[in-house]
Length: 316
Image (cartoon, rainbow, N blue to C red):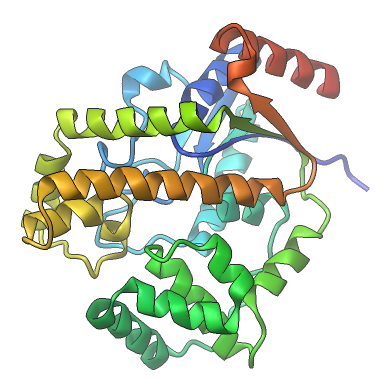
């Protein structure tokens, strides 16, 4: 049996400092970063996705950022395919692949080499679900999922229409099977890599304060103007890219559905809820090493300890 390739994973809830940590470790260990984020792939969606800037990359190669047009649909199957290719390219450069992000299902798809065997597509059913979300709201769609797969409904945010639809499609296409059961079975697979999986966390109050501050910074940097530019390009709430946190709320404010102040409040509230769901997801993962950032004197001390652990585990 051939030796498994090494894969470093830096995960955690939104605003926990994953991107900076991944860059620091890439510099120290000679690595390149693969973004496991469902929004940073989109060109022109920089502020609302908290996309890592060229300056923040500090010369470290980054993959799966700015590689899709917002009109295109990004999903876990496409992510898995491109992430595998990125890992191959990084390895060919004799660098360490570092998978970084907060989308647990994306990370899981690579780590366990999940089989996304194509089922027969039912476009009419998908369109019907999309119409329900548009006319009756995401909550109605989420209630449908709650009825057939409560475990999936618990971890999928009602506003994540794409994933709710995918779970309902899976239930229908598989003849009544639950995507939560499928995901659990896939998680029990043996890891496809010699992986070290770190999840950053911190005191809940401190995390929520960081989230609120980040949303305020997004507004100061011009999130409203960014959404206006996307709107002028013809993007609407029906586009998958515009369903991301921050974008759909500002779009709603621009369309008169709520005030800008209400939109900011909803973004902060729903991002906090999203972070809580992210943490719940990672708690179900196996072999995760939790890094509580506020238990260290500073961020450097936490990264020093992570580097020490990595070098000891992999003897590098």
